[in-house]
Every structure is written in C-alpha cells, then in structure tokens.
Length: 224
Image (cartoon, rainbow, N blue to C red; front, side, top):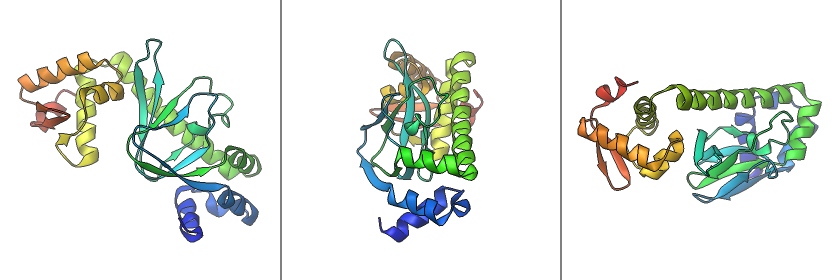
C-alpha cells in the first residue's frame, strides 16, 4: 500500500481524521502497517495479546469467546471497512473478559500500534469518542448474540443465521460446514445437524457436503 493509499484509507475509516492535528495524522500514518492473515489464522488470543487496532481492508475477522468446555461462541464478524478495536482491548480498561479473533478468510488489515492509538486518543477527544463508540457498537453485537442464545429457540436462531447469510452473500447457497455454522450460532455441531435435517424434511433447505441451499426463503423467515 502506497503512502497515498494508506492516507486515503485512514481518512475513509477513521471518521475523526479531519479533527486530528497534522502531528497526530503523521503519528498514525507512520505507525500503521499492512498485515495479511491467512484463512483460519489466529489474530488475537485474549487479554495477554494486545495486537493493536485493526482496520480491515479486505476479508473477514470473527470475534468469539470460549466456553469452559472449549466450545466457540461467535460474538460477531467484521468485514471490509470495519475497525476491530477489541484486538487492542488493553486500551479499554474496563474490559474484563477475553476474546479471541480469527481470520475467517484471507484478510488484509492496516494495523495501528496500540500505544500510538492510545496516545492519540488521550490527546484528542474526537479520537477517544470514536474508540468508545466503536466499542459500544461491538458490545451491542455481543448483547444480541447473548440474547439469541439465552432467550430464543434454536430453530429461530438458526433461521436468523441462514437468512442473514443469504442476505449478506446474495446467494441462496451457504458454503459452510455444520461445524462452522455451530461455531457461529454458539451451539454443538450435532444440534445444528439435527435442526438442518429437520429443515430439509420441511422443504426449507437442501443439504450437501459443505453447503446448505435455502429452497424456501419465505417459509424460513416465517420462523423468525
């Protein structure tokens, strides 16, 4: 990424950019580097791993927590143009739980050094407000994930997930394994497989190796 491209991307993603001093802009630019992660690669591994602030240029990152029995519970996923700030959770002093972040696809990010981003936030109220707004938005996603797991029946949760995926990808074929879907909806693979087979019997989907094809979107959404 050229310096001009870096500046343009920072300006696009960091909405407080025009509120920074020239010195602060230069500090962020000089301490931002392009990093590429392979699909499945661990990006962040809990409280002892303060990677930095990630500005997603391409690909997708998944943030999740681990249950005591090792089950992955997906909190949210982030795509191009999103800012991943929990990878620099050491900045946010009141965060008391560990999150894990993986690359769901080959992903390219602009990584801003944690100490530098923290310094800019301490000097500039617009940068500080931005960081807390992003954190608040992510915690809203976390609360939605928890609400689904605690208060929704599993058929409804799975129907929401499938509907969201076809809206997101624009395709009625969802190319995910039952194991992957289980990690996204915070359940066990066996439970996902049983419910998908039920959906198949009801004519909502057809199952194949590594994919789920939605046949009746209207009927699926009626479950939500």
